[in-house]
Image (cartoon, rainbow, N blue to C red):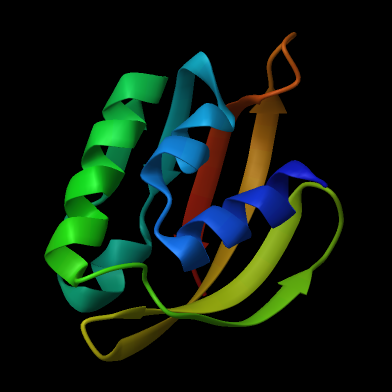
Length: 112
């Protein structure tokens, strides 16, 4: 299964450990889609930071974030709608770089 498919599956399942494991040890997740709901950009560096943040995010959200209308553009770009507290946000997630280990070195998520 491709990295982006695994990413979407982990987000839908609320699997913070599986999500973090998709990233290299020093991988980066940069998510500016939160700007659409008046929150600060999320910038996480390192697998541990990703695992811990999503443990809290899934916990405070009451579980996984609802994701709808997933459309894979290629192995590195996916578009989807994600629900933040009842607000639907259209985003593009792209793997900008992979590491030598085949895992995500940098993923950028942008609102549309």
